Image (tube, rainbow, N blue to C red; front, side):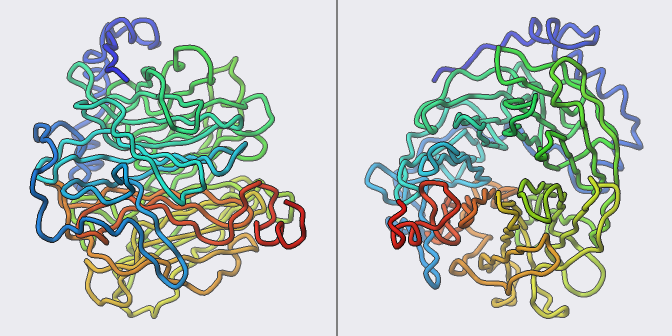
Length: 499
């Protein structure tokens, strides 16, 4: 893949419904609409200054890795849960001296053994220069191929992967263009083995995307959001209809959702949530002939606010805000769920909190605490991540310090719900303990998020940990495998001679 010279001036003239003649002019216009009070409120008081940007120059891999780094150990196990390293060499071994974090995952619904994971790749921990790393597998994550980075020597950050109903993968990331930080989107039709040339996607820092996989009019549409105050263009939302070379002109949506995520419901409605827990819904985003409209439909009370820049991850976020929708055919069909790592009242620094809506986001349940440790345990539950299976099961994972008593030593924990979040399974540790304060690539964080996709038999997780004495990306299958995607675990298929 080669770097694309985007010609930002021409792009903005053609695509933006504003009189600006360049991305730089559009950025000045954006900033002119934000008062100093708003900037102070949304950045300084929250500690959320623009964290993604060019810093150190690129450094090649070190000739001699730090003595704490292990040369091998490409997988780890905890009570039958096996985490497989993704950023490995051609022999499947750890690559010493690098760092990898902020993983995101895509799975081919037409062939679930084809999986791709993208991440921030640091070739040398002495530099914070990051690139778009990725790995792919054709055997359900048993082994991985790490071809390198999308564009060698090109700054990239905040990778987000997703997939459409036909099995195409998409890689969305932040990059540096003509003095601004914008996003672009690449497509793969071969399970992430190769990627096409990217298209310009507007955007900015702390971006996310969702793809419509329904059978409705929006099928194949790609929706993106980003933090308006860290944008290269006006607005904080853009839509790509899945064909052609252009995103629609970006829009400004109500409540300016920051650091949030999106989810497409079974009826094609689009939900967005940000760090203030304001939920937005668009019923017409799926109609490619109109400019989408957004309605604030509710504010979720999770008993606190998200945490940033402290404890286990002092230079980054302590968890994203997640929204997910239930596509099952049962009693929980249509439910909307919100989950976040929250700093609430009391002595506990962080908990993983959940709420649900059964009426399209108009009203919300009370906050439910997912981690089941003692209320006064003083443990950090961070990087809470949620996904929902087609059968309605809700899967949640997080990092947890309950067994170490110190903020830098965590284990990965898991819980699930099969009744729409009314009750939850006991918490289960699914990884060994790791130190989140080592392996920093000239940054004092292990990224800002993990990512997970559920199917009817289990969950597929991409996460970062330091089992090798450095930051690496791992794939973990939680639950039974369902390689033919028929909703029945493989062991049952084989026993019943149905597969």
